[in-house]
Image 1 (cartoon, one colour):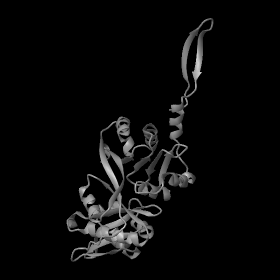
Image 2 (cartoon, rainbow, N blue to C red):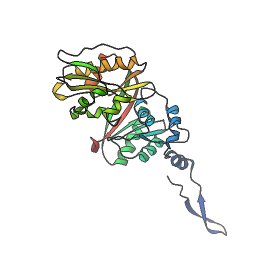
Image 3 (cartoon, rainbow, N blue to C red):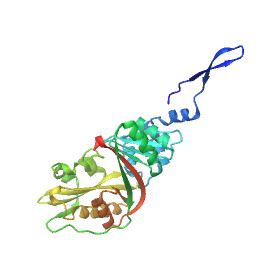
Image 4 (cartoon, rainbow, N blue to C red):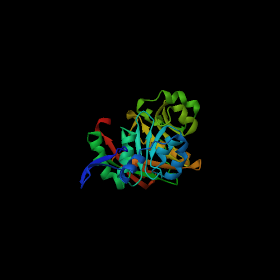
Length: 288
């Protein structure tokens, strides 16, 4: 709320009408403060305030790469992070639903809004009114594992870590796999700075797993398989190899999954991931 004065009139003996200006309330000041967009020089403080964990790994990937916009209160106790990739998402952290909704308004429309479980009911009501449309409410869990489970590729499929020499193969993959590099800006970048594994059939990459997001020590996994090659265990095999590669680098894999995505959840179960954190994701119907 802006710092507008509130004006009222009262009658007092011998004074007639008196104009009284009221200072902004504490709540008004608090909301105005919360809408502050941070400059990139404050991003390290945001990272320290949020801490690295299974819930923060994806937004921290964008903050570390300076491909995010961040809004927060002065104490960095309530934070909103908007990703700067083709399908923008807003991640919010904190426990003050009113402040968080104000931050969401500052961050603007997005495809997905990731919010704390404890504030989800209040935010859902306000978010629906602000957007003027219905929302899907999707429980999400973030999982991790500290040991690899080996799942081999089926016969006739070559499974391996891909290198820069495989860039032409990746660039010719089916569009169903292209979302895997969105958080990096392209296959070349994820090959240089992350990990890519692939399942190839007749020299074509038909399934791939990537470090979709990299924080300081955590790697969030993304995996996809062409429709024509699904139900062969390729996503499971790619994920298994990717987990081994991540652990070999002394890092920790993370599996972020909508609970309704039973296929993805089942793969994480095969690989013995365990749930560490949870949140609620809101998806506007117009952005599906």
